[in-house]
Image (cartoon, rainbow, N blue to C red; front, side, top):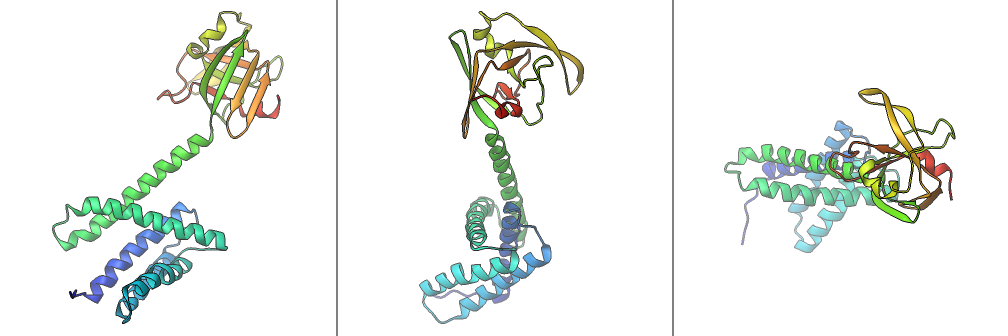
Length: 261
């Protein structure tokens, strides 16, 4: 079986796909996207791939050359790599991007009826891949600040998901201790044996002069990468939901990690 390959079209297609992959990898690695350098890397990758096609060698050898030698030259040319660890990370990221881009492009490819639409759908696939990556990074950033919290008062326990809120610096004006915010409804089982201690003033977006009920619980345990237990933690009771989607019901003051057990 023989295939007829137009080397100019083959080069152009590889050049564009290599450019999109290098650009996506540079941005995903936060390696500093430099258009001229990425263009040079894509050009080197496309040119070397065309040369490999012309080599009279077996398919396995060509496959190894393309996926090891050509990819290495393309990466070193297109993305700033300062160590072997960074190179391995960039190498894996490039193939992960190729897998994702290939899947997205295959989905859009069924709608291609003319060759001229190839480049348009390639760019669309790239933008979709970037959107998926940004969404994944957003989830990862949020998950880094999520933890499990256990509030205990007079033998009663409440277990809920909490967000470590770096913007929360609320403190009790009398003791100077950090205050965490919990939805009143979520903390209801603990309030039966707890009297309101006092109300404190606080400011939030759209509410410059608000009042917050403050109670002290016997203990607060936080479970994340490390366990943190605080005795006599101060809790502010919010009358509204804290998270719009209900993914967490407590805001943890990060200063609370400076004290306790």
